[in-house]
Length: 115
Image (cartoon, one colour):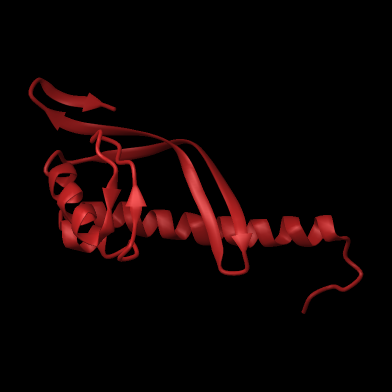
């Protein structure tokens, strides 16, 4: 039950903590989907009208088919990732923005490379 006597700053901090937990759970689900090596499984975690700038492509991606195509290329490099810095911003009752800096280690011509 919500504490109606709580100051707005306290409610905001409480909401942000809940959103942060959800965002971390969703990120973990995404990271686990990489292990499947199934681009369709990874792309299914995005909305059909997703847009994003991928880690190892200069091309802006639009839609689930472009996401799946990108992840086919990305997963072939056996990615292992680590979060270096992140921000989770609540944007409404059911929305948040989770952005960050990540290091990925990928297979390359000369062995494993960090990007």
